[in-house]
Every structure is written in C-alpha cells, then in structure tokens.
Image (cartoon, rainbow, N blue to C red; front, side):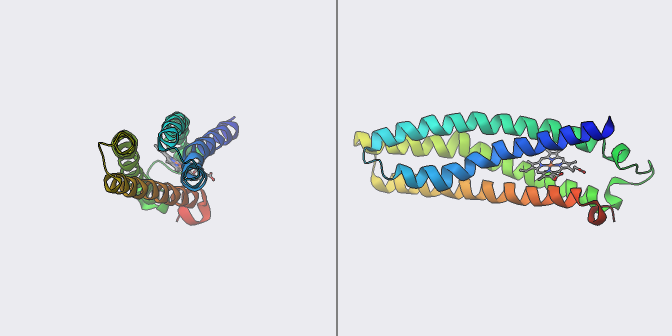
Length: 176
Ligand code: HEM
C-alpha cells in the first residue's frame, strides 16, 4: 500500500511538472515564432491573450498537483525510507537539497506571478496601445524584452528545481 501511494504521488508530481513546464516551452519556442507570421497585430494580440490565459489555467492546475503530491512525498519521506526519528532532516543531503529546492521554488513563484499578473498584461496593453496609435513600437519592444526575461528566468528556475528533485530521488547520493 505504501509503495502504491508513493508511485501515485510521484506520478502526480511528474504530471504536474509536465503541465506546468510544457506550456512554457510551447509558448516560448512554438507560439512566439509562429505568431510573428500573423501580420495583423490586433489578431496576434488577441490570440496570444487567449492562449496565455488557457495556459495559465493548465499551468495553475499543474502547480496544484505538484504541491499536493510533493506535500505527500515530503510528509512521508522518513517513514517511506525507514529513517530513524533521531536523524535530523539537514544531516543528510536529502533535507538540505529540499530546503534549497523550496527556496528556488519561492523565487520561481514570485517571477511567474509577476510575469502572469504584471509583465504579461503590460505587454498586451503596450501592443493594444501601439495598434490604437497611442503607444510607440519602442514601448512595445521594451515590454516584450522584459516579458522574455521573465519567461526565460522562470523556465531556467523550473529546470533547476527539477534537477534538485531528481537529486533527492537518487537516494544513493541524497541519503549521505
Ligand atoms: C511544494 C512544492 C514541492 C514539494 C513539497 C516537493 C517535494 C518533493 C519530494 C519530497 C521529492 C522526492 C521524492 C522521493 O524521495 O522519491 C520530489 C521529487 C521531485 N520533484 Fe518536487 N516538490 C515540490 C515542487 C517541485 C517543483 C516545482 C518541481 C519542478 C518544477 C519539482 C520537481 C521534482 C522532480 C523532477 C522530482 C523527482 C521525481 C522522481 O523522479 O521521482 N518539485 N519533490
């Protein structure tokens, strides 16, 4: 039973990661270059808004799955790996890596949150303003660069957090 729950939790954790990280790759490396082929700025902006909103939902659900499954895994690590009660969490790499992972997670969440609720909408507004003739191409370019910076930083952090997760799971290494 314990193994079954562990397998379900790891599967849910990985499914959540796929849902959270996958759309970020798609948007950056598939949608952005494809969207450049749409000559009408207004249509491009509308499609980007719809896509990013949908992906926001998918990524948000992914994040909920990650946290629920991750919470189960960390809540049961001692029992699952049959570690004694007097072993302190930070005495082994597993605990130290987890703390680093949670710190990076907080930084990543701040970046993703700022991107989703501030930098992204500002870019959309800049594009709208440029189309309406009230904003300049330079303002749009600056908003786009900032948005790209936030996307790339969030993605790099997510990939680093994945490495830390796999390091924890490699118990011959992490239980030292
Ligand atoms: C509240 C947030 C999180 C918690 C509590 C958590 C907890 C854990 C724990 C305890 C493990 C080790 C499982 C084991 O010992 O078998 C793990 C593995 C892992 N985590 Fe997380 N995690 C969280 C967020 C994340 C995020 C945001 C990512 C990536 C974007 C991530 C990626 C991974 C990966 C790739 C593994 C290895 C899975 C495997 O191959 O077994 N985790 N996580």
